[in-house]
Image (cartoon, rainbow, N blue to C red; front, side, top):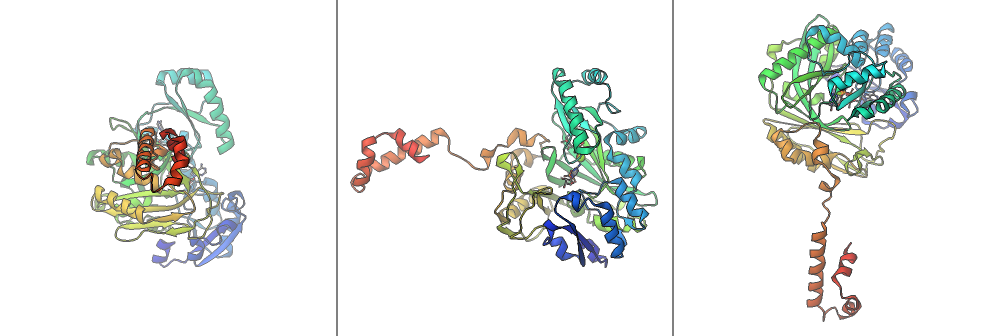
Length: 481
Ligand code: ADP
Ligand code: ADP
Ligand code: MG
């Protein structure tokens, strides 16, 4: 909406009853309530949203990310209603919405793929033979999966059948599509993705990479651009592969081609997200391009106003996702009221958020409350700035991922750039956030207390007489707990 406002475009917000007081509702020129909080009764009501648009004489719909943003039938309906869908064609969404169809589409473009099956698994015995060929561990993936959901690691052949059955039934219930396939499970991979922009006149460019390897539950928490391990040559090769993927589905609009990168820095195509990505601000920072404005211009039929050669990386940007989750409790959602909510400010700090002090975090949606982005000349300066910004961010009433992010940003592995998607498993434990005393430290403290007590016996005679009857350091230790 900020981008639209700068372009002189008026906006209409849609919202559910849970989001009545959300900043996006107050910011828009007009706002319309769609219905009760569950997204099935509000944000996912395609027909109702289109009807509202027609009544309000809206020209175009920006689908954001999540919800209907990657729904081909929604984009088709929007176009059929005479409205503009700010995104790619329904055909591109359809192909890339299925991880299997995507792999098939790019096959002729010489794009490296993770070893695995090319088709949905129908014959378990045949799949098992293939898995043995690929070598364990393998990953079973739902073709229609997303948001880090619909994946199962199989460590050994003996577990194959059971995991396969579970994967199929989960895929069926979560995505309405039981199609699953297998991929080699890359044990210590990095997730590096390329931002794409294409216009409706056949021109497709890439806007460099984003490093998204700090994840929990296969979902990103910290992203940065550029990546600390991508050389200019690798950037060029990945950029060209990503443009190839986009060409394979006649892509236009903004999109992201995701790659998994192994220890030897070989990269393999994972999937394409046919929408604006949560972490797009880091790309905006290092390229100086407003991706939402570009999306709008492309949707209006304009040609891209720059070439690949015009684009350059300037400086370094980092984003941390502020989720209402408790890192000390397995990153489980922690909903409640935002009792204190004060944003960090100052040079090189951007906050994209959706809440105000006093608001409740609803249980109905993804619990991301904000994205905090810092920008500076060098990577280390961007890290230092992020730690300063995290320290300025005041949030009470709920647990958030900020403390975890602060820990990660200071960790030697992150600082050196030598990390992968296993960062949380390898280095994080709740103890790093709330340093508790070790047994030895507790005993030392107890011994010190006893000594102190002995020296001051006179002054504290009455207290001493009670404690002296026990007269054991062990009791003190227990009392200190
Ligand atoms: P990104 O690839 O940009 O990091 P995410 O995978 O985190 O994006 O997803 C972006 C948003 O869309 C999140 O709010 C996420 O919960 C939601 N989302 C993505 N895919 C699905 C899905 N299949 N079902 C439900 N929500 C999804
Ligand atoms: P989603 O649609 O849920 O985003 P992706 O295919 O993009 O699914 O995978 C999400 C994450 O899961 C990746 O960023 C990576 O951490 C992990 N992952 C996916 N495929 C593999 C693989 N073959 N080996 C190891 N990790 C993988
Ligand atoms: Mg993905």
